[in-house]
Length: 239
Ligand SMILES: [Zn+2]
Ligand SMILES: [Zn+2]
Image: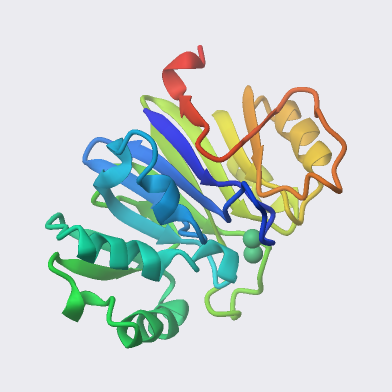
C-alpha cells in the first residue's frame, strides 16, 4: 500500500506546498484524507494512479483541510468521471459544506457520477475504498465546534498506521498507539519533537511529520522524516 502526500503545508499560502491532503491507496481505489487547496493539482501530476479516489474524509472545519474540494469536484465533472465517490464528514459540518458545494453547482445534482455524503462517526470505519480502520475525536477542536476534529487508524497489510490529522496535542492520539507501526503526524499545533519522542517511547517505528511550520521548527528531527508534496511512501519498504 502506498501513501502520497498531496499537501504538506502549514496552512498558509506557500509557493511549493499545498494544504493538508493525503492519498492512501486501498483495495478498491484510494482514500483522500482531507482535501486542502491544491489537492486536485497534485492529483493530476505526475502519474495519475491517484485518479481512483473512492472515498474522501474531511477531518474538521478548518479551511486548509477542505478548501480544495470544490475544485476537485469541478475537475471530476470536467473529466466526465463515472466512478461513485463518497465524502465522509461529521454531520454538523456536512450541512454547511454541502450547501457551499451545491451553491457552486458541484454537488450530487450536478455531477455525472454518484456522489454520496456519509456521516463521519467515531469507531469502526469501512469506506468504499476498501480500508479497514478506526476513527476517534482528537483535541484540536471542541466536539461541539462543527463536530470537532478526527484522527484515523488504518490496518495496512496487517500493520497499524495512525494518521493524526490536525491535533492540539500529542496526548489525544497517544492512547491509540498500541501496536502501531507507523504514524503520520500533523504538527502545526503540537510540538513535532515532543510527538516524535513520545511516539518512539510507545514503540512506533516509523514517523512522518507533515503540516508543520518549518520556518518555526528546527530540523532535522532525529527519528522522523519530513513529508514533502508528492512524496510517495510504499509501506512495503518498512520492514
Ligand atoms: Zn490545519
Ligand atoms: Zn485545523
